[in-house]
Length: 349
Ligand code: AMP
Ligand code: MG
Image 1 (cartoon, rainbow, N blue to C red):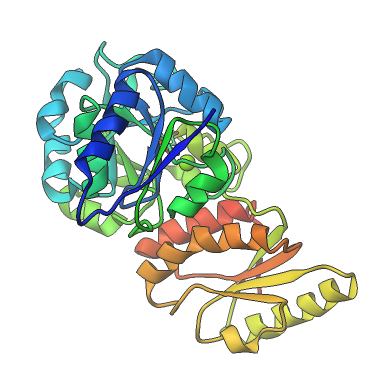
Image 2: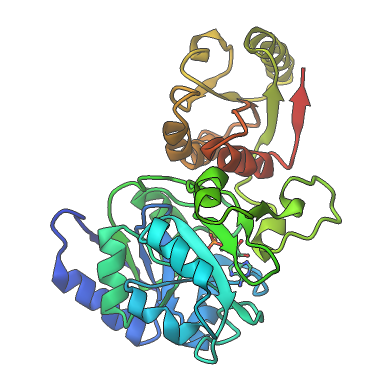
């Protein structure tokens, strides 16, 4: 398939391009588009065949439901059985923005979109290109991240082209994703509101709106028997092609531990890399030193992480070590993604 790639400027949106993208969706095609979290791979959420195409293009297991993106609060009602009071509170606080809410679905949403579930995940993104595109497409865009399943989510147009060129109809090639991590997911269909996936909207922020919010216990479990409520959280994700080990401990000890391991790996002829903060970047002996930015600047780390994991693949790194980050605030989401990428391979020293 020939993929049309169109540059799009969020500050001066070309409506002719958006209108063509909308036509493609209405005709059952697929368009990748920028959002503030990561790039999405969009199809008509209300057409089962479009969702099937999304799964095929990504190579995604079809029991892993898609998020339905809207661009207007008025479009929420028709796709859910009822709008919970808590959803209105969350929408008021965080929409448009990087928060996904799980509610009971209406008949309008096909099971292909929800991976067979009676619930639907809904998000109202803030990105202006995303909003214009969703509106032009009829209001309901099913979109997972626009990466091949298992690879790090795409945070730039370049990443999307790498994974999706030749597989979909069009790529709206905009700016790099502002946030760089997928949305926070809050489930409102159980007894208590529950965070199924940590993200940029932190637990503390949600707690201010819904005081009894809890984390899905399976999120923090490393047990293979844990069943996360978001089906996608059980899959291996983001993993670079090389091995990735996270090293946690006192900064000097971490540097010396990692440098010892790097020497061993180099002696075996491996290409090595480290994922580290600017403060310690000069101390490592790796072939490639990937800098996340200042460790205290969680937004910078979030913004850079997926790009670094992809870059390590481009650089054909065999063995990667990463410093650990504070597991708090946005750091919870950063560590969640990093631990998944490392297959929970973490060394405490
Ligand atoms: P992605 O779009 O690639 O960021 O992935 C969407 C995430 O939302 C996956 O982890 C899904 O399993 C999760 N998700 C989507 N819909 C639901 C739902 N109805 N219930 C629980 N999790 C969901
Ligand atoms: Mg994804």
